[in-house]
Length: 96
Image (tube, rainbow, N blue to C red; front, side):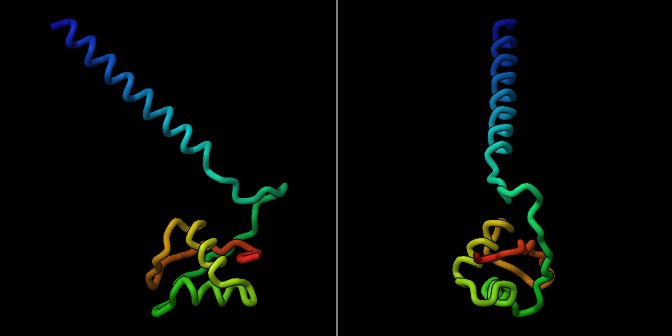
């Protein structure tokens, strides 16, 4: 009886320790948004009805490669699909 309890406690502690270690590793592996000295300047864009990520990329990064700008927007915001009313973080210098 006591042996099972000790094994259960040991397994539980191991799982908790593993989750904490994975969480710390995941948090520490996030890429830096800006390698410069100060924080990157950003704006927030509220998606309008009928607007796509491509439309937004063309609007905020005129003259830039739209594919690269869309990929950067998707990476920064963690998604590729948008709906009306969503807020997207737009970094300065998008697509450059």
